[in-house]
Image 1 (spheres, rainbow, N blue to C red):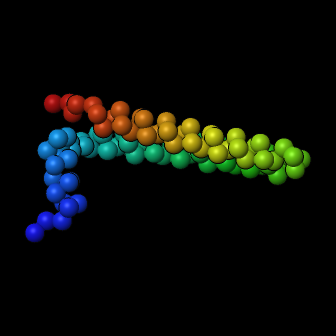
Image 2 (cartoon, one colour; image 1 turned 120 degrees about the vertical axis):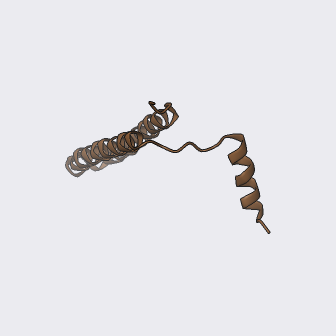
Image 3 (cartoon, rainbow, N blue to C red; image 1 turned 45 degrees about the vertical axis):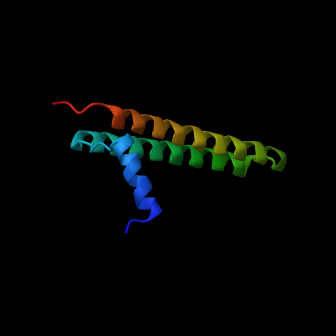
Length: 91
């Protein structure tokens, strides 16, 4: 007997079947991850250094900027990955 979760997943699969990624798509997604993780690390290093040097009243604004930059980069990563996933495989 199937659980409610399994039944729901079965219906979802019928509505929009999952497509298998090609090796090239997997490689490109990995490259996007690597590039964005590096960008996030670079921003963290730079802005954490700025936080250390800043006056106490400026530190909170720099922390907000860091959070905003990380969120922007993560959103960019997901958009790029979704674009790659949605591409039709080359025959």
